[in-house]
Every structure is written in structure tokens, then in C-alpha cells.
Length: 536
Image (cartoon, rainbow, N blue to C red):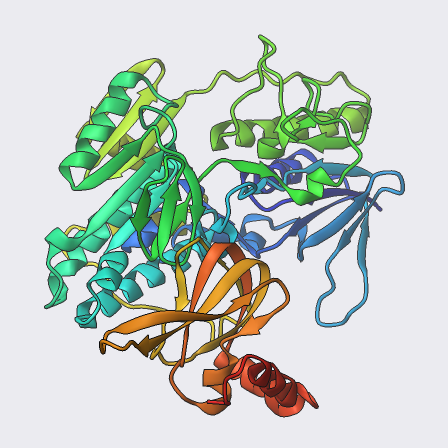
């Protein structure tokens, strides 16, 4: 039995598998396998509507086993690909043993990953927006911020952070996310007795001088006008430089206090593709010929975001869903042609247009060279994408959700799916407090890079409290353990004096370690003694 193996469960991979099922129908000696991290396919264009609850959480996803009846689906992360031995190695399952799949033809469509390189604090504090889990986490995070703001009356600075929402990236993805997010928080704010909708601040940060550079300046200006009318601030010509748990920092030095930062910044090649010894462009995309075969190989194919697919004029085609689905059909045809010894067909598709939703029955679209905006563009957006949604059952569910959204109030349920966040990295900028004297202790910190100072407030001769620095901390040192070991409030303030990254361990996990690792508690108490402080 010969095997075609597809890596990736997005538009490229799933549509390639569907096309291959049709192309190879009746050939009993060929099998199709698809390796995907999830057991479902996400219809990305509708993902922002999950934030506001316009569509249900599962309405934009389709189970792979219903879409691909004749494909063997492996729900695993792919760890490595060996093009010499023609094998794909996936992550272990419940048993720690290698899962190796051999192939005769390989189709690469793993997509891209969010690129946080060179942006301090974004991996730790920014919320990405690429899949269903990201959309669900963002929705729950936003609801939690509103819940906290409603009961926060003692700290105006914290309240401002809770009610400020920042989205980085002014392309289609960023604009659609900020539109849905803005509509949602302003709609549900009326349900909170102590939140004035005028306190809410929603900011879109974009490095260029206009949003939606993918469409004409006229449509971009229309989108900007609509967003500003609805209360969205546009920080144009500004690039996101860094982030902390309390702020977004722009490249001009300005700081936006926020507890919610969403990143839709450009993506980078998938690490799996990055690790392959295959021809790549300068931006890391695989070099393929017009038939979508990877340069130098007759049985390795690539499509979608991970491939640089040449068009008839030599320029690479854009990484959009409409191009990926047509590349998928062509790969199926060309694999079939290869098996039959026929001539391969080149990829030739110009694109039908571009569309982006602005929420509240507004959108922008460029279709067959025509620029459309407002309600008509929104109607076309919904009609076209509803028709493209795979499966009549899924279309009926989405259409029903849209109809009910016209008459029913948005849902306001916060789903907390994880019991504990566990140990995480956090980033702090100079002058920022990690914690303040008198606060309750809930985490212990290990300093990985940068420096911090330990400060305590002491009364002066005049009776006015002054700050006294009695310790400086560097990489490898820990702090915050005193309040946890003694179950007491923080007896000092720890302040960042140069940008630093720490490993933050929650109270529960630290307690388990201190109780079960021999000598760990004693080691921390010795550290406390060296600092000249009695155990709290």
C-alpha cells in the first residue's frame, strides 16, 4: 500500500485531502493520511465572531473525520520530517513510543506561527489570535477583566488597565478582532452596575499610516471612520515594542496601561518548515515550482502560508484561503497526473477579491475590481462565507446564530478551562513593581535576566515614610517566597531596575515543591536569613 501524507489541518491540508479523496477514488493501492494538531478544521474568517458570541464556540469548526471520510487522520503534533528516508515522526500519545508514518508523496501545509521575535514581553503577556483556543481564551479574559473592574474601587490605575483593550496589527485580522471586541465590551458593559461605558478604551496599534493596507486607501479610510465612530482609538504609525502584564509599550516610548493585549502581528514560518533542509526564500517560505512541487523533489509538495507559490508574472501569490483551496485542488490533480505519468498543470489564479467585516452590519470588500463598503459589503461577506463553510449542518447552525443574534442579548459566561496556569514567564520593564509591600503573596519568582531591587518603607525622623533599598537581585536569585512560606502579606516591594524576565511559580505549585522536595524549604529560609530578614 502506497501512502500520501499531508501535514497540517488548515485550509491547505484539509482541502488537499478532500481533493485527493476524489482524485484517487477507486485506486485501492493508495491511502491518504493527514496529521493535524487538532481533530477539527477551523473556518478562520468567522473566528473573530466567537469573541462577541455572534456565533457559537463550535459553529466555526468542523470535525475532520466528517470532512474526510476516506482519509486516515492522525491527531498528533508533528515533531520532525525526514525527506531522505521519507518518514514523518509525530509526538507520542498516551504511551511514550515513537509514532512514525512513512510516505510516498508528502504534502506540506503546516501554516505559520505568531512571530514574537525581538518583542520583549509579548510571548509572556500578549494574547495571540490564530485558533479556536485563542478566541475562547480572549473572550473569557475580556469577561474576567470586566468582572474585576466592576468590583475594583480602591485602585484607579488598575481599573484603567482592566478597562483598556489593545489590539496590535491593522490588517484584516486585527481590524476584525478589534471591531468584534469593541462591540462586545460596549454592549455588555451596560450589565455592570459600576462600569460606565465611557471608561472603556479600545486601541488599535498599527505600524503603517493607514489600516487595511490590503485594500484601496478609500476602503481603508472608510474602515477607519467606522471604527473611530464606534469609539476605537487608532494609534497609526506606531509599532508595538514590548509588553508587560500591565502595559503595552510602543516604539516612541509611549505606554498604554492595559491588562488585555491581543497580537495579530505578522506570522513567521512554522518551526517544522524552518528545520527542514529544503530550499527556502529569505522569509523562510518553501520554494516551489509552478506545479507546487518543492524545488529539487518529485514527491514533496507544499502550499498555503508555508510556500512561496509563483504566479504567472513571477510574484508570489498571497497567503489567503481562496488561494490555498485552489492550490489544494491543483496538488491533488498533479499527484494524480504523476501517478498516471501525465503532464503537470501550473498554478494560475489571480484572486477573486478581498473582504473584511467591521461588525454591526458593516464591512469592506474588493470583488472583481469593484470597491464596496457598508451594509452591502457586509451582506456579501456573510453570504459568500456562509456558502464556503463546509457542510450544510454547519451552515444551518451559523445562519441560526446570526438570526438569533439580531434579537437576543450576547452571552456573558466566562469559561475557565484550566485549573492552574502553572509556572510561566513574565516580563517587566524598568520602574515597574513586581509586587508591593502589604499585598497578599500568591507567587514566587526566579529572576532569569535583568535586575531588581528590594525596597521597604520606613518612617523617617519627621514621621514621613521613605523607601529604603536594602537588596539588589540579579539572574538566578529568587524572591517572593517569604510571604508564601509564612502565609503573610508581602513585607517589601520588589521593583524592576532594568528590563527583566522571571519564572513565576503559583502558590499551590510552590507549596507542593516546598513540602515534598527535601531541603527546599530550608534553602529558601537560608536565603531569607542572608538578606537580613526574619521569615515572615
